[in-house]
Length: 633
Image (cartoon, rainbow, N blue to C red; front, side, top):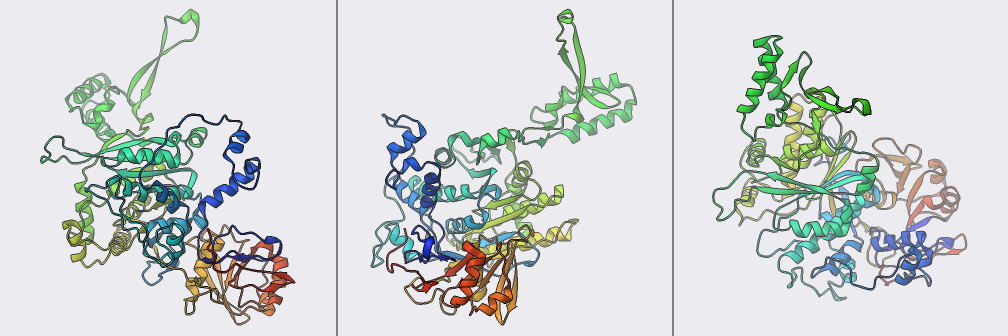
């Protein structure tokens, strides 16, 4: 039989042998804890002696002694709410905005307006294990208190009731601002579920990179150890920026960029190495060419003059690191490495091998680098044509990380997109190395605070939200790059907006809200039930007079596994006209599909027939039922 897509406020609709009560609602994403328990139950059934997880049985199944003393853990006021936030499904959906997009039909880059926690949960169905790099530049929490406007933008009464934040009359039971833990506890409570959701989207060889300063770097490390595991800590970059003369004690000139791998051991097993081109090479090569022009093939003199040049450089000059390459011959600058012969009869003799500078142009990136952050502000304001925003992310710094970690065809996700710098940086890096990377940015429709100097200029420039600023910045960046020497694919981006579900939440007899846009409903069903990605192509078919949406992967990787969504009356004649195969997935409205069509399709599609259902009914003599009013956990 077809697998029903469950509804938010009802127990799952079940058909025949597919009975079960663990599915999320049709307008909800999956419950992370239920998924984790399901995986654990498959791996270690002995840990569930009575159907429930037994910690003692779990230790026994793993062959481990149960700990008899407290173990190290990281906690804070609000950690329980943070875990609920991470686990609970979301009822939001993503609605395409074709008109506001740029080159919708050909682009694979995505800009999403919405709360990043909701969006990250929605993305899990289609993007689990897909991102090579996830970048976050969260609020630095520099004030005396911290309040994150975690109202999601989309009402979630079921979520709020389930998490205990409102009671049945919808009265608030908790405060968003924790009274204990000062400003740090609310910040950690905000970050934990977002990190947990982001981890699901990383590839096994993927990496998360987070910018932070001294206010929360110590807490962030502990939090990342909790979510990713301490063994997956890669390292920290220290970004040395401009110095301020106004500091009373220490001029803080640096920020941090913290790196954790999804699976660091996997990176080691695959011998993955990150390499960057050494600084100061061009200056060194230029000096050698200058000396060659002056002294010809007098390599001894060239070497002596080159060494003098090295000595004259200040210690911080990047070419200073190459001063051991002070000898020169026809092949270039080199130094001699002494290799000891392994033979005992030649123990006192050494082999001297020339090691050339041009053979050693790359090395592992240093953990400290310098980049004046004021340059980013000027570059951004020049692009926008006026002073709009202080201290946007530096696209050159981001480009350095993108070049280091990612390659051809990789996906980069930014969950705190801000002014859209990451998308701009990916495009610029693609231009620099002729690769094609894709990006997906998420930014909340947060209005600028007119009481703050930096934000007030955003408002004065005519941007109602920071999302509007990001969208305009990316439009301008695309135009600027296309007007230059960029010869790659035409640039653009699709816009999606987080909105309330199109599926009915109240116990009505129809599964879809009356008047909902058909295309938006089709996208919601395809994303949540079909795992469709946001860069998919959509064809609107006329099948026996019925509109059927066909979703096609952008890279044509699933040409043999088609996804169809039909929201209209679906008869046996329509089914015969569509001719779905056993590799196709078909989503129908249960209240619109004829039983005869379902009988025919169920034998063909097995579990790939999905029905949007609300009420009990009999099909093929098997009873489908629902327990109205009982919430889905």
